[in-house]
Amino acid sequence: MSDQNKQKMQNLQSPKGMHDILPQEQAWWDKVRKELQYIADHYHFSRIETTLMERAEVFEKTLGETTDVVEKQMFVYKSRSGDRLALRPEATASIVRSYLQHGLAHLGQPLKLFYLGPMFRKEQPQAGRFRQFHQMGFEIIGGDDEPVYDAQIILAMVRLLERLKVKQITVRVNSIGCRICRPNYRKKLIEYYKNPNFKLCKDCRRRLRENPLRLLDCKNPTCQEYKPAAPISLDSLCVYCNKHLKDTLEFLDELKIPYQVDHQLVRGLDYYSRTVFEIFTEATAADGTKFDFALGGGGRYDYLIEMFGGRPAGAVGGALGVERVLEVMKALKSGSAPKEKATVFFIHIGDTAKKKSLALIESLREAGIPMQESLGKDSLGAQLRAANKEGSRLALIFGQKEAFEDAIIIRDLDNSVQETIPLKKVVTEVKKRLK
Ligand code: AMP
Image (cartoon, rainbow, N blue to C red; front, side):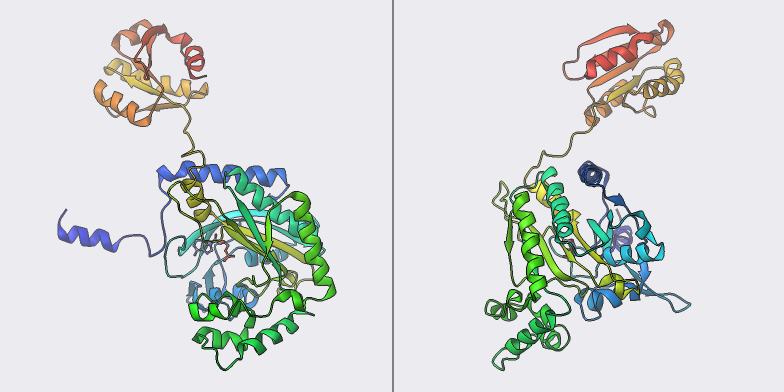
């Protein structure tokens, strides 16, 4: 390739931090989609697909204007008419927007929804962190603030991971309180972090004024040193929030879901209230790799519907990062790449046979046989190589002689044993051998 062409190709790569999902990856993705659908059916969640773009305010007003996601990570596009549209950085705000816009409350009280789709955040790409990534999540919207719903969301997420053979799952849980008690916690955090000896990073100095809970989330090593001695939310919870947390944990105990209470867990978004949680795996891959990232997270968001102007109603949800779950599945060799269906490769020799091939393959497909072919190639060798590459189990060889005699050769590609059979028996013979 010439240097000029190389340069041209380089200029036309996918955007930074955004990846194609190639054909060889699809078997893994199919597995995830299949198990997600299984869990959704099992626990009665209905699928929702919202738009990939929203008016930017949908996120700004709800996730919080001073959160990293809104402030630094949103892809915002200004249309000629002056509308500001954002590629969604997460799905919950969009789903609540759709819930209210379409009056979905009548579909169920509460309404249980699930989704899988791409999200967009302008982050510095690194391992497990992309600019376009996928989340699959569950929401229970419009119910009371019953802790049983918090437990049901966690249950669905954990069971999904289990079905995907992710081992040693653990859930970190906390309560960040409600409108009544959270201001106390904020005050305590401000008092603690105002310490003149602390050398907080620039972001945290701002967070101290605008969103002190987020100080606990800071990844800066100096700021992290102050975290262990920081006040914990439990000491500030009101009686109601305390009981809510206790009840949620009791449901998890009953379900035998492993969890740790982490009283300094806060989540990056403003709309959370009471329960927040993150899900991790403590498993070790064969090569010794540990996974130090969260596979998913979520929480209760009782004020979100109100933020959109709806009547106050409880809601809780959570999402798993698909790419991270896949990374763990692959590293733990969870069943290796899911097996493709055994296929039958059709091989033709000569013009007469070729003419009849397409219709013949069509009738085999209609009979439910997973057929592959390479009709564009005429040489027997090239077709056999293609069959090998596909990993087909059987070949059906259709030559001039067979075409005249209404017969076909059936060949086992594992041991090369073959026999000629009448065409009218081909479906039964193939099905028998594929069993
Ligand atoms: P969050 O609500 O931001 O905690 O996101 C929920 C889950 O989505 C995380 O636990 C990750 O598994 C995944 N996730 C979030 N951001 C990214 C990203 N930039 N790249 C890949 N996965 C992500």
